[in-house]
Length: 398
Image 1 (cartoon, one colour):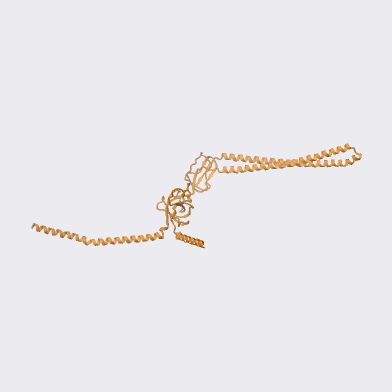
Image 2 (tube, helix red, strand yellow):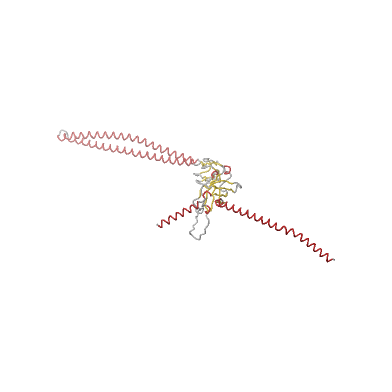
């Protein structure tokens, strides 16, 4: 009986186990079909997504050239004095906005005012010398008039003495007059001729004196002109003691202080034209095939998360960054390893003034250039080059 009970218990437990396993076996095909359906849907979505991605890449994505090697730049102006001296006043502070022509600092003007006054005095001396010589010319002109009168008188006396000699010569020859009288008249005629020569010499000397005095007048005028040129330079230096802003912008890196002695050409501060910011993006040479000026650009500034700024390509540099370095690479020497070069591209920022006020030179940005406007340009270039090569080959064949 005990064995029979054990057998019955075993049969019941087996039946119970079969009953438990039967729902699992029934649900397993349904679960597999569900999993298969999910996998098919996922695969279909992946394929469709891949197709859309590939289509978008071929139509848009491959024409989007991006780089994070880009920075905001501005053509800052270095402020340096033209003349040396002690700083008397500083009119601006660090980071202050200034307008073009606004005074920035003042150098002590006393030395330059004294120099200007000294040169003005030299001009006065030169003018007085010229006027004095002109007065001497007038006096000399009177002396010339007197010399001309003396010459005319001497010529008259010489003519009279010569006439007397001519009149007494036949009389002395006939004995009507003594030869002693004739000798006296001849001596008087020679003296009169000598006086004429002396008067001529005096007149010539007086006239040459006029030329000397005119040269002195010209010399005094030249000295005055040289002094006026020096005065102009001195006035320029005097005006340069007030240093003004060449452009509008903001003051930065100010190092000048009141009482400091500054040399000519020493940097005192910089003016950054914050309203004329641009971006210098360094693209790989393999990204420039379709890049053209005027193409739209998307700009993302690291400091302005979530803000997208518009811009456009302004120009492309005429050489790689390595070519403009202090020591350009000499690839013809030593071992050569090809490295993809980068070329600076200037990008104009098309932002409103409020956004521009948040940008400063040196900020890092990421730019994306849309080059779709040049789509097919490389193909056209290749076709033109093929035509050119065929034309050259044909010309060689003829």
